[in-house]
Image (cartoon, rainbow, N blue to C red; front, side, top):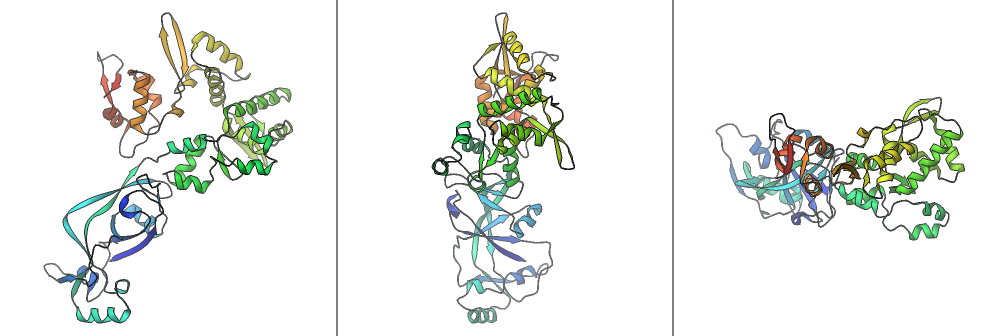
Amino acid sequence: MLLSLELRIYSVGFPTILILILRIIIVREMEQPQSGNGGAEAVLNLEPSSSISIAYHSLFGPHDDLILLELDEKLLPDILQQRITLRGQPDEDAVLCTGSKTYSIKFVGNSNSVFLIPSSDQTEFCENSLDCKRKDDDQQGVASVIKVAPGNMELVEVAPRLDKLKLLLSENPYTFQEDLEMEDLEVVEKGNTGLYKWDDLVEKVQASDEELRSELQALSAVEIGGYWRIVDVKYMDTILRMLLHNSVINDWSLDALNEDEVVSMLESDGYPHKLAHHCLHVYGNKVDENLGRQVWKLDERRVCVHFAREILKEGKRKMESFMKEWMQKIPEGMQASFDMLEGEVLTERLGVETWIHAFSVSSLPSSPAERFSILFRERPKWAWKDLQPYIRDLSVPGLSSEGLLLKYTRRTQPTQDAEPVFSAR
């Protein structure tokens, strides 16, 4: 059976189908063919060792709007129920997205000729229905070829291209100054440059909806006034410090914070309800919800990492000096461990001193090639215990962590018992 469906594409970047209707022809070989005297049905009804005549259709031609798409069986339901989108800007290679995955689209040429034969109901290729009836009568048992396909489109699952999301949200972070201007609607409207709603992000970022939402959460983004924003680091620091200050004054346990009390108190201190609630999401976890009372626990690691970042944002520090200041800033009741800073800092020996500086995995690109390039610019050689925190989040469908290391690094091990060292390939 030949099945056709239409998908409308907006501003995709490969030249052959720029802003046109892509007609996808799906060949389902395993289903029982339908009866028919001509067209595609006649071909599908052929018995073994039998033959059929083929002829050029009267409208035979290049038909550039007809493109074959080869599909994995698991993708067929998404295609048939139109749960897919094509995403990309004019200067980008388009990707196909389902609700949860992203696929690159590649054209693969055929070494053999592939004939596209319409069904016996050829109304879409005829001037009118009478012409179709007359041609059916004239060509009983003859299959008419409408196009010779030079190849087909192939889908390959890829990692979502999310680095662009970081750049977009970094254009205009939410600051304390905006709170002061929120009542002036004219000022707010004029300041919408660099702000993006959900539909804007879907149009600009090549990722599925599920992957996009997951990354927004990873970036601690929040929807404010219909726009997705990241909150300025200094502003988040101020809100967190006020929360901790209130917890001391009101004798709140950091393991059992009442959401209503915390948010109400922060609002009375002048912080918007949305950002007060966002602070709990960024630095805590919901641990209980009973009779409308929601309880949160501050995450020890996230809070400790926050204060370590604040200390190191000024630059490199001696380890002893850093640890002393870090311990002073940690809220009472929390236990800071240097292991918490894995993937956040690097250390080096200079003479007899150990120095520490910020180097966060969250600031690195998600592309493996770009990631390894930056890593080896930072250090020409990496011990495995130092390298592993900076690559474990890399996800490339079909390629394991060992495969990534083989592709981008060179491993050396002086002795069998020595720790392996990795350098650029």
